[in-house]
Length: 321
Length: 245
Image (spheres, one colour):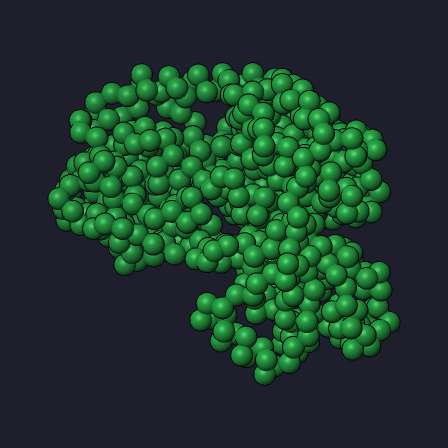
């Protein structure tokens, strides 16, 4: 499962803290979902602050985070997101959003409530040294693979870090505030692949109505509650899904699929969230309202290229703390 | 791929995937020759991947092609797939034949009695039909290594359960939607469970990781409790079945 000496000891695990990286690729044909960070931008920016490759293994914190004790000489952690993060029993200021901090042996980092959005990412310079399973260190809870023996973190876990790969240099912060909460702006979708199985009224309802994120949501999917979207047929021949597929169950309620989704499904998919807005799905909290607007594929591709330029420019926004 | 009677349809899944849907599946029929077309295109893409293609996911009537929108565009991908479809077919892999032992009924097959009742058959007749069918792996999906098996006798056709279970145990052999399947890990499911096989279909620590692949054929053999217990022990010590051919 893991290799190397532990650098961080888990004192308490938080609500749901898992090891995630860029995800498992090329195995959807065997029924294995990509998993990986639910908010890939949070993952990339945490790793940018830590000086790591963009897809290095990090901790994904959900709602409320862990307490960690440093078990090596020193280690640098980076907070990708906005959470109440403090070094326990020290008078110093809390760790600001989107910043890195070097910690010494015996110091204890407490990641409390995620203040904005649902998740934040805790990267460690060098990256967590978790042996990959099927090509990735990401935890896939339903399949019981990856991360800490396929499960969430728990008290007593010890996390090894590739300390010899940690880059030298000062602790950094991001001189920009990337989105952490999913803003009230509509999530942009391309209709289909099975929009043809819905009436014009149902398609109009999807784009005109407010939906609410159900508490029964997880890394598999966001269940949305709102006006039903009846399809002309409730079951189709199972076909492949993507992260961002909006499938409609027999009750007419939509589910936006996240990264631990089934690779295929038998419900019709009315629309698909465009790739620039997929990370926003990972930031939505239960109870939050959601609206959708429709774009075409060419617009989605244009928006994606613009977003890639924006994220690439984040290198220039790194400053010493 | 001259075998296609009608050209496939392209359906966008936003800006990262294109679904290539082959005709006839929309009518609900599950045809081996539709699956052959899917697997032919899949093999053609694997041999000469168009720029930007990340992975492909074959289903029984369609192939999903996932791509990196920063390396290509959907318009370019469509043109590349059109060109591949115009070329002579690439033969997909020939499947293997597997025989999987199943203990039907009891705690291993909670729905066996109900399935018999709803189909107007005796329990023995359900087992007889299920063990005499030659199934074909149409696709893997939903959970790691989960095979969707075509070839279910019409007498066993039932819709999915109204109340899906939160946790169907590993190895459960089930029927619904005109197909049979095996749950490789414990997970949610709405199919009717007839029995359990001790043979792991997904084992990340073993080689191969996934026992069954699309185009493989499967027959089930009924075994009793005593034989199941022996097989559970053998599997725990690393034994795996070999394909017949």
